[in-house]
Image 1 (cartoon, helix red, strand yellow):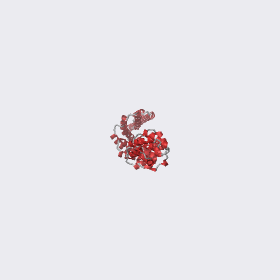
Image 2 (image 1 turned 180 degrees about the horizontal axis):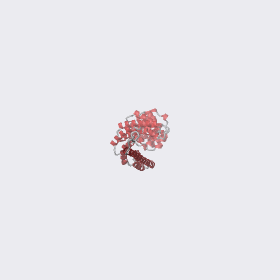
Image 3 (image 1 turned 180 degrees about the vertical axis):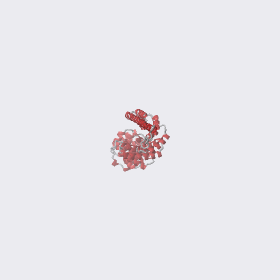
Image 4 (image 1 turned 90 degrees about the vertical axis):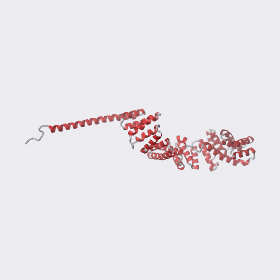
Length: 403
């Protein structure tokens, strides 16, 4: 779904992963720095603290050459390579550290990260799935959830996003969880999460777009009229807020779409006239305008013809033209423009509707003929009566007989 591409599921990937590295480096330093008295090790630590990560990597590489069987050297070198965007090189050293000391979260997390950044997603999921959450400090569990969610490790990634949202409790995190749930078909869960997201961050246009998409999916996926109407009304509200934040043509059109779904046709017409003014060469607002005007509550069928004709001239795809012709067929049938209705339905490939109109045309013609016949009979009867009255009034001796 489009919503997923519009919303950052977490922070920028590179930034997020480097932040992961920062805490893991600190964890590594705390666990191993006191155990060594080596000039290259000390040089690596000093360079790292000074954020000279390239120099730190070179120093730790020298240390690894001297002490190849110490997991600490491979761990720190791997972390420095990650920090300098050399994930592929980092993998080998972190795998070696993992072999030398298995089951250590301070190794598994950067290894999973390096595999993920190297495009080895399945391998990353394999490593990250073995991390014991219980071994992690509470504040650092979010790092694991972020990595697993970014790797999309099976259905569990949605649960990880939920955990991140609960931990961070910010709009972006709840929106990321909602979008993932929506993409997984969990529409109710998505709406609930995105409701929370817009409450926490009501002025983020990307979150508003995702909220709108979830509400639209909810409206389309239910057969309950009350639930459908409620979802569309909520969609109107979030679309209007989105259009205030970013008054683009697409966002104004979203407002109109939601209003049509909520059966607010008169309001939709006002919004659609605005959209047409913004981008008159787009077929969609003209089509929606024709739909709204031909709704039962507005019933401006004659007024619907022009925007639908305009939409037909602007549309390019066969599928779009089919939708427009079907609507034109409906409108012309309402106006009793039977020939135009039949032509429109035929152009849409809707032979059944065309046949129904043809039948109605025949019935209408027969009814019209019957009405004309009855009118002629009534006229003749009236003429006959008039003539009889004239004859009676003008006949000689028509007065009363003499006594």
